[in-house]
Amino acid sequence: MPTLDITAVLLVGGMGTRLRSVVPSAPKPLASLGDVSFLELLVRQLRTQGIHRLIMCSGYLADQIEAKFGDGRAWGVTIEYSKEHQPLGTAGAINQARPLLRDAVDFVVMNGDSFLDADFGKLVQFRRLKKNLATLAIVQVENAGRYGTVRVGPDMRVIGFNEKTGISATGLINAGIYVFDRTICDYISDGPSSLERDVFPRILEHGIFALQQEGLFIDIGTPEDYARARTLFEQLNAAASRK
Image (cartoon, rainbow, N blue to C red):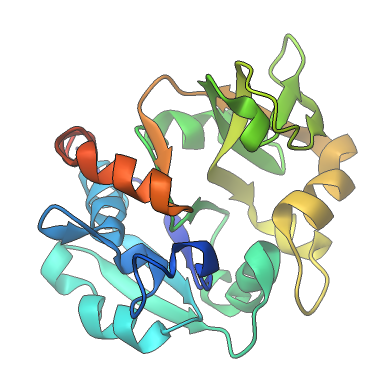
C-alpha cells in the first residue's frame, strides 16, 4: 500500500462516562478487544492504508495513551500529541491541534471510539476532487434513530442533519471519519466546540459532501456496544489489516 500524503487526527480525549462501569480505570480508546486495545485497531487500520503521520488529541487519562503508544515507532507510524487541559469537544480539540497541522493541505479526522471498515484513499481522493471543506464518511445502519441521520442530495452533497429520534429505522449516519480542508479551522471558535452541533451547521452552505462506505461499523460508547465489539473482534481485526 503506497503512503497517503495526509495526516490523521484521532480524537481520543473523551471521558467515556457511559463506559465507566466496564472500563473503570482507562480511557475509552484503550478498552481491550481480544489481546489489543480498540485504539490499536484504529492505528493499524490507518497504517495499513498508507497513513503514517498521526496526531492524537488526548484529554482524559491522556498519560495512559501516551505511555502506550509513545512516538508510534512500534506501530510503524509517527505520533504527536495535542493534550487538552479542559474538555474542548470534537471541534475544539482539532482547533488546539492546529499548530501541528500548519503544513497540511487537508487532513483526516476520526473518532477514537468508533470503527468503520472504510477506504481512506477514496475518501481523500473524493474531497480533493470536490475541493470542499469537509467530506464525511457515512454508513447505512438498521437503527439510525440512536445516532441521528445525514440527509444527502443526488450529488452526495449534505443538505442537512436529523437529530436522534430513538425510533428504530434504517438510515444513513455520520460514521465519525472526516476529511477536512485545512481552512476548516477558520470556522471553529476558540474554546469548547462541537463539530456536529457548532461547525457543520455553519459550513453547510460552503459545501459538505458525503461518501457512503459499505463496511462494518461499530462504536463502543455504551457497555452494550462494547460487549458487541468484543464478540466481533475477529472481524474488526481483519478489517483493520485490510489493504
